[in-house]
Length: 313
Image (cartoon, rainbow, N blue to C red):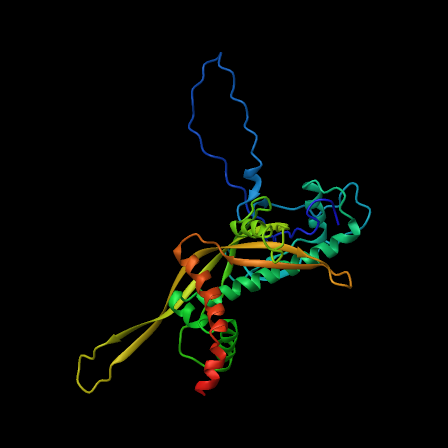
């Protein structure tokens, strides 16, 4: 739809503008009459960016001077919970904001009649990326041991566990869903996995030589919940022991990497995309999560896990 990165997704915008940080304080300094006044410092471009998404604090809803078509200014609310504001979800940019952002980035050849479709694709991709992240969190938010229990029967076995969880009532602590704290578009930074696929494409046609057209880093708040049981010993005879059960919560920040790929369009002409979403290996725990999920699924299928279960029954 335009010359450069035609279908690059645009991260969801926050529903409320963030205040710019106050200027640094300074101590009073005496100057001599002959000393020239210090020049006024111009705020840097980085200081005008929202630290939650590295975008301008506000995206204009005003019509461009060269714009010929009317673009809607309404914004759609996503299904992605905000990490900085409880009980609120992120909002996607309006078509008018999207068009203004594309002009700001230098894409002056963006067709105005295609902007609404671009917004729809952008929202669709981000919703898909969030579903993938939720899938990772559903497996590992309660720790590696519980993650292995949920992954040891492969992807198919995990789906069965999820269905059982919806139909049975348990006394375990309720698990809180993840929340998106902030995100950062890094289209020029190739991930090690994408670079490896590009290298392998020279050896096998199984791998595509086309690099991802975009990359995002999403920072997610993971809440681990577990029951904390304190048993009080009775002080008098003939008194039953009382159990006080509370829920202990710990919150940690997890970074996820998203590579956006485009594929050949459908015979009907519809565009095709696929996403590679996985935890960033910022430490041994995230690396183990990737090994447990992918390795568990491969081992379960390669070792005939389903056939073993049928024989045991």
